[in-house]
Length: 364
Length: 113
Image (cartoon, rainbow over the protein chains, first blue to last red):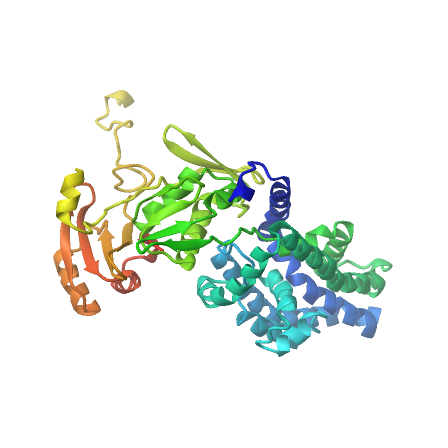
């Protein structure tokens, strides 16, 4: 706990900022640009190589239509999942079962982008996990059920993360992502620039799709950060929960987590108590003592819901928000998109009578 | 001659709450809350709060008890009104049941861990 005492941890703050800055686009505008990109890029490369100028438009259209028929449903599905998952995951957890499927579909339509091909083949290969993570990040196909399934798996990983000095490890991860992802994409972009736009010279009418490709390739060439941005996620250390005695649980890193979410601990704690229908207190060393037996999984679930409800911006999904209180109503204003909305007050609701009535009377 | 001010219709009259029949604005209006509480040991209690008036709580309780094979009771609370209490963690079952009976899923809120 002593390590958490310094109120302002520069490294933490920095990382937070980073994630936020990147996060705003992936879910807003980026969902579109990044996913279709590989398909289109591949398309143009094949065209550029094999087909000559005269027949190109027709051919491309045909191909495009064929491609769209195959690839689009998959993409839509992905996006759906994406929205379902919204932001729910605190950690980087991926739904593994979906990804191979998606990739398979895409692969049949287009030539798969480099790194994904092996991942698609082997379903549950753990050595491949890192790669898969990366590919899936683009897709972000996750839902709550998958979380549950993967919790165990991820727990092991989180344990690792915890052991390593927290910030360093994460940064390393980020770096690897930054290092590898653009590479895979870069190939595609280069090939497009090289052979994809023979129509530049001709004076016929450019089709919308061609111009679109051109726009995206130029966009990504100009700011490569956009491509990697999908990999950025809002990460929070897993709650460390232990049992105190028989009937109490200790949630040790509340203050840490609250700091990372930029929320007052009182608010978080109030929400947790209301949600879990229990009570508790904060002990001397800043840990939260909760009455009742709770597992880490359960606390995590509650926290996740808290984040969805009170931390992420409903408009742009960015976690960079401020919670302010005005006239007894909490307002959440987003730092990245500027939207402002009121959030539900925390209400405990009906509490059933638990335990001995006589005890209850005595306290009243 | 029709003077607008003499109309019987009062444009400023309260025309009900635009948000629906919410007693208090912004929060717990017509949501059905399903909560869970821990009891001793690994026992739990599920409470169902905010049931719309058109449903008969008593009959619903009976159906719940039969369907989920658990005991339960109907509690009258000052604030929350009629609350159905069931033994054990029946949250998902309740929400499935209610959805099957034609209550929109968006109006059901499942709380708890």
